[in-house]
Length: 327
Image (cartoon, rainbow, N blue to C red; front, side, top):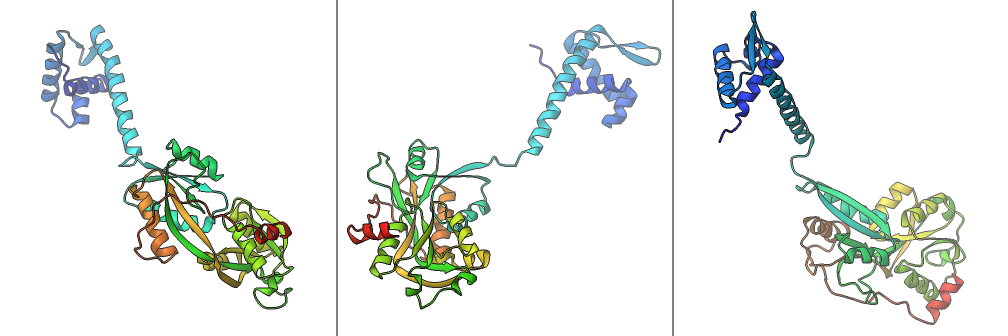
């Protein structure tokens, strides 16, 4: 069985393009005798003459022209292959898909996710925001590697998953300097009748925050409600209302939005969870994210995350519901 020697074919192709053995030998940095010998071997294997001599030059035979068409396609495709491989990363990117529940503080999420992009693995980050129920439905069919939420996996949803506590933070109240100059009294009484921006109804801290207002006999004047925490912060920056955010974000908010912290409470805490379909955290990106949360953001050291199903927190009845209506 005759097999094609691609080295011989390359020499034939170069001679056909150059028009002579001498010029092809220069380009290939070979002796003319070596090139001539390789051509003879190719013609012998094909049992056909590829060139005929015309004067001092060479001319392709009919078989030679057909062979040149194939050689053009072969080596052009080879060059395209090399160009394509050179343009690609040395290692293919591994997709890391995260769902982020509405209301989760984006400044905290960024600080947790950012270390993922510094892993040795080539990671392509894909983040999507949405309502928790829809995100968990996609998590169940593995469209996400994890979902970041402000509550554990809800028990009423038919989704098999596990809740890993990333950390928790007390809450701090913020306001623009111009607005704070208009308020009287000390914290927390200064919040009474003050304009306030409330987290949206899906935020886990909302019922607890409203209950805290009720416990302290405070009735802020609610001027807006926001599902998106970044949008809430932007409105707070303009001075239209006070707002609350995790204490862990204080330095960022003061610098980024030029607001001032006026007081805090540990009675209400923002909790963040990684919701996954695996009991153990095994994905390198999830491990990096969890480490950033545990050590750098919430300051919990090496305490291992909890991975158990829990019911979402429920606001107390009675006064909490009434406070929500008054807020």
